[in-house]
Length: 360
Image (cartoon, rainbow, N blue to C red):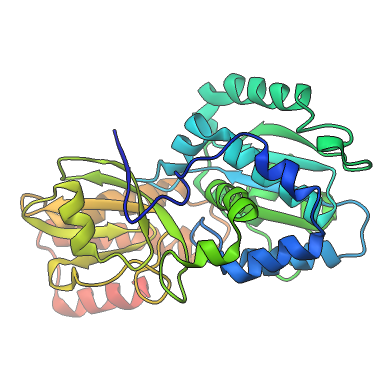
């Protein structure tokens, strides 16, 4: 697997286990939040909500019981960058969670680990145990009196919908994984009804670096509205698939050249729930201003039948729908039926227009 960065690493830059935790306990919580605001770090799971805003809301909540949740339910097809972080850079992720606990005043962090990643469980729990022995978890962390925080891991059951933060919280509470109505939001009423911050694996990893190097350093990467770098899970028709760290603002064409993609017909950005970019638009830039993504990049060359690709995605959504909402429960089935009719040439252009409306 290729694992590369360009224009200087951010996430993959050198980091010593525990250094951000040891530094943060000497900082005021407000100063940590200032660095996060200055960095303009946004959630790396795909939604792009400002991390500093989320943490500020939870920190300001009146409740004495708060929680940190790490969304490691990496179920979007074509995404595997969080797996790499957890296996090869756990210090970044767990230190980031400890920092979050310090800032918002939480005593417990929970990693919601994708069910298919059960094979990681023992190594991750062993790593957490070493953190406890090194005073990076537990009581009076890093010698800071009263700073008590621990991390536990809970396994999901493979449901795609649990990648959504409120469905994830429902699952953590032992309920069926279904999205909650919002408001209230998790920052007010989250796990066990208490203020909760839910962040992606990559977001916590970025926080560890920001605490050490500062928000201004982070802003030197990427663009004005999309600061920092992004980890991309690149798969499909290319010579060098793998996890790539690239600055926001990188063009699709630049990424294709980097990974050795040839005769590319289209690129699926953001996994099955994302969007497809045709070759006429490869000058588009990856970033919140244009082509935002949680990190999945699927490449299809001229040999691929895009109708078959679409059918594959629709079969996935029909299978993974939790059935809670009518547009998803019924709409996906109707769309799949439509794709199958097109496949058999049993359609009219009027019917295709109806499918387009349904797809909106």
